Image (tube, rainbow, N blue to C red; front, side, top):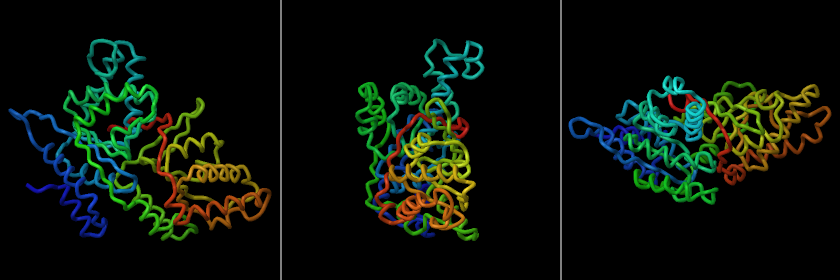
Length: 382
């Protein structure tokens, strides 16, 4: 029987949606192997232990696109796909529920479990929902995640859960130089033991190519320009699901409603018409490598506060070397031509123009920091 994953990949090559990249070949074959193994049954029709896949390489090489094809093709009905941030946010929320609940509350949520350790009941709940877990962009720099991952995945693997993971880092580079890293090393060992590790090391950055071929500043109300903005969001996101991400900043919460991995999308009003400051923008720039801002208006003196916040946001993205995609009412030069602060706004105009250039896009940072975040539990594992 042929592979649905391979057929889907070949169809996209034929249709021109994808361009053949020899570097992706090994990754496709590894996904085909995983698809085949998931379709097998063990002795007496039981569920066999299946070796997962850890696919790693630089950003933009097509890891998430290949994950899309595999996830849609995998012959396992109980499956879920989530960005790793979202998955861990739900895990921490479940651990909190276990620790804060009394016996009846725990039983109502988790069923009957002995002892006070939350790992087993949390793993049991996740395993009951999905046999196949597909994670995008596994990256660990948070001590809370590092301390829980080894034991959690031991429990998941014991329940024959299969994982398919993409990451920008090789397993032995995860949580590098992190606090108490020796306590995290067993998780790395378990991933290497339970997953086939495949490097996707092509030199071509498909995400960068897509941004170069498009534009990153869309201005005017023309439908085609709005369409271009929407299409670029869709192309960069691929099949990665959107979900809210909440950043915890000095005891406050700032939620970005539309995120997908290292991509975030928000309106000008959401970012600049509410009382956000430099710390909030620093957290956004740390967590996301590309920010889509839509509905940027022409700014007038009565919108001076919003204009100030916009200046701070752009300065922050600029200093962090982040990519910006914008849909605005005019070109950067037209946004704030008159009024108090217009002279100072000229520096922002210069930076906005620089951030549209090919050199900026090529040299922009695609590393993200696992700042303390939470994501919608429903979006993480539904």
